[in-house]
Length: 281
Image 1: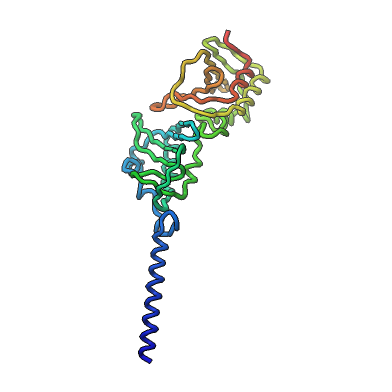
Image 2: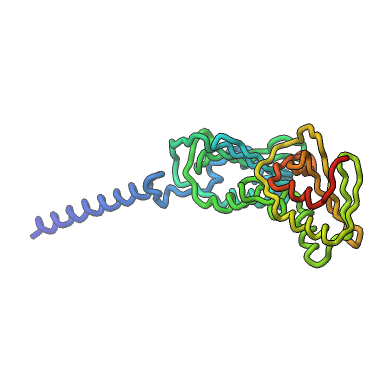
């Protein structure tokens, strides 16, 4: 009888040890099993410069963020300026979790979010290869990246438009204001020659056409231009809203320093210029 009890106890102990071992093995799985123990905060792997941004964001917040994508044979650069944009990006990054290391490398698909200080220097950056985070010389599979991907960088996708996704917050203010009141005039300067439009129908058409201009690419600075056009909408209270185009297809916007002037290829800008009805003389 005692031998039978001893045998049962031995068998039970063996089964318990095997169960615990399997449980620990399952919990420690990396990129394959995605066990619970493998999930950790992105803060555990970020480089020191990014950790410093988070630690000092209340006293030394970067002033801008530039999104860069290289893939499919091309490159996209697009900036956002101001505390709201920078904090939105930092909050989104903080939501990311890592679920294990990976050695997978994707060709022609790299993205980076670079944070810029007021003096123009780079405060830190977060990079991805494909969907995997690159940090500390390693790659990590990640979850909870949706908030970061949802940030609207102008000209990031072929679906972006000047009216809805443009870099100038005053343009959105202007279009919202036009829902209740129309401008009384448009002052147009084409290569130094001034024109004034006061016809209500023409003004309404120009506002309407703004919604059909798409943004498809962006780059820092401005190239030499043969033709420049500045259209300034004047409201009844004297408030003015201006848009600048070069060569009929490039929209120009000047951010506060250190970003400065950026150019955006504006698909459909020719329709706006045609609606204005003015050309260089």
